[in-house]
Length: 177
Length: 253
Picture 1 (cartoon, each protein chain N blue to C red):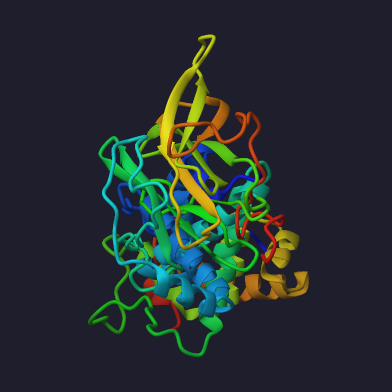
Picture 2 (cartoon, rainbow over the protein chains, first blue to last red):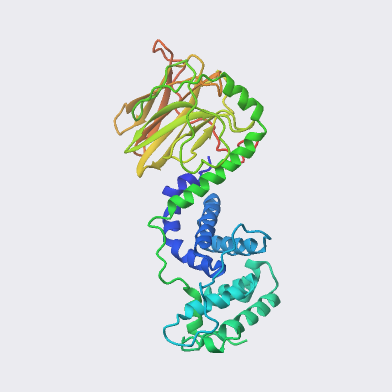
């Protein structure tokens, strides 16, 4: 008799897997959605999908499976015409132009610039440079050609690069807006 | 294209450095799994809605008294009442098919419950968990020939953080009780008892279920009638059962 994922939650390491990967997966989901609530929901749904596939993938690459599910979920959600809510990274009372200073968190600027990218550009940049995937791997995950990966990566990176100095200091004043 | 600097990579890898997340994310995942399974069941139930409605109409609105761990509720030969859908995770989803209580008890501080149900035309003689302990643990005995020897299955599980063995099965009409002999290292083993219950799920069978602590091996299951006389010899091998929506051997999946 085949075992069920409900049993595996406690018996075969699924619970441990979910608990240990949660934070890391939420960070990935957040970089794609830029909304913490949606990121957690996405991880929750993706882990639930993994649960049903656990017998098949537990001895393989379960993290790769769930990461792929998260990426596809984020891309699919962004393509839906209506999303119920459309959380975006927007700072309240955002000034027109902030002066560059150490007080400005570069993450804020990165988030803002990421929000300006298309979801595919964002996904490519995150997978390519945060997840260290090869172009081929990114192409496989997103179901696009390697050429498209290059294009999205180039455009996305160009925009982000203008935000961050190599030493990590924000240079908001140079960001075209 | 040149590679981005380490600074950009570092920021991209952790845009939410202060994120801590829930203390235990697993309940969220489990709740989603339950919702998904409920949706699957609801889809399956569409095809058998008429039959399920007929069964529900014939079921008495009676919830039988409970027992302790390893003890069964109800009385031999009497139909059991429907078990309320457990709270949490299912509130916004379509109702599950009727579940008729067969046995229940406690495990630690948690209540467990086993009920009979019909999930589809290919998985209609099933025993399922109706609790928050075992999460849809289901075994269907559709291949059991009515009137045949008792068919049972034992599974080692963890419920409420406690390792247990969960034994479920179906016995022929006339069965009032089953004796489950467990291997405990002694020559004869130990015996636990479970009441055999008739439910609307299958009037031709008598369902039973029990939960015992620890991972134990079942040596045999013996069926007794209302007078305590054996109905056939002890059955030492587990019967054929399947898990709906998981086993391709479950017809109708």
